[in-house]
Length: 391
Ligand code: ADP
Ligand code: MG
Image (tube, rainbow, N blue to C red; front, top):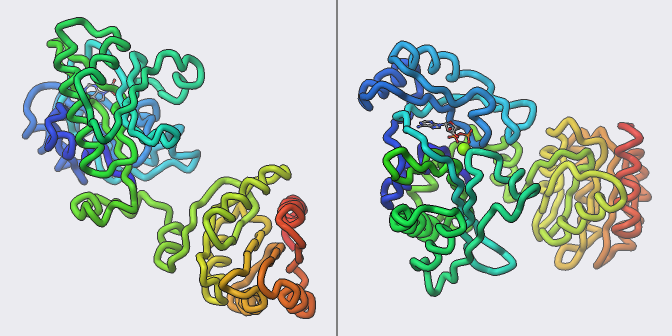
């Protein structure tokens, strides 16, 4: 689960990670009141959406008067903000953060993520803050300093010094930086975060470090331990089909391809997507229907997959272990009566009673159901069907 910048900054404040003062606003009037409450003479009006690159997209703007705060809030609230992370459809801005303007001397980058290979959280820092860190990582990886922290030892001053030296900080800045990084590590660990990104981490003209931006993502499986974070969930930022799927116990993640996938088991679902890519296609989604695939779950799966207009074929790849293939075959036939499946469906059923299942499907003689013998055969047929258009 991800949260907004203003929510991440609320958490930062609780841990002593310095951030500029600010208040979230849901209307233009509230935006102006927030600016008055903050005082000062320079404010930044920041669109709150779950995506980065807002500045470049016109969603972060500086105001030098209350009048300007009003104009910018009017402009930004309700706009559809398109950034490199939103996709071309963009995201509707429903709230803005009004923040005091900061005197920026330098923009750095600091993040904490889980390094799955090392099995440890790592802190990543770079002098190239304010830019897309993905581009820095791709073009000049040596400009990113990474320090792994063994969670049993925890963050120590030497971790902070290694980052600070890598960043080329001045001697008198190092102490402040270490405090900042230590507090951020604590935020990460105590909240079961999956990633924190501060881009930019700003060095102010007075020599302090301030988190000017804040992105946080959390481990969904640990949310039960953090009801206060769960309460920060913004459903309007999440994909409607993914939400609906979750209500029915299906793990669905929308992707950009045109071959819909319905699979039982996360591992087989990953393998199915890899195989589709391998034979030159592109999966439209990840969908794990779980262990108890029946007519209802299969029907729901079809319904959710078909909400995506890019889907040109569906590959049903189910291994019958506990659940028997003949039952699934009947479930698929029943599901096609419940849902109007207007694209070719390639079915590969293997495992217990696979032969009976193949016979059931053959006998049903439904025009847009194509049977496949194995994973490779199924993937090829599904990709070919997707490229051949709808039936
Ligand atoms: P995004 O990463 O989505 O573009 P940021 O919060 O990083 O959004 O803001 C983009 C840029 O706007 C920053 O790199 C910084 O230069 C400027 N900016 C953001 N907040 C402030 C602020 N409070 N004071 C001064 N400049 C700011
Ligand atoms: Mg940023």
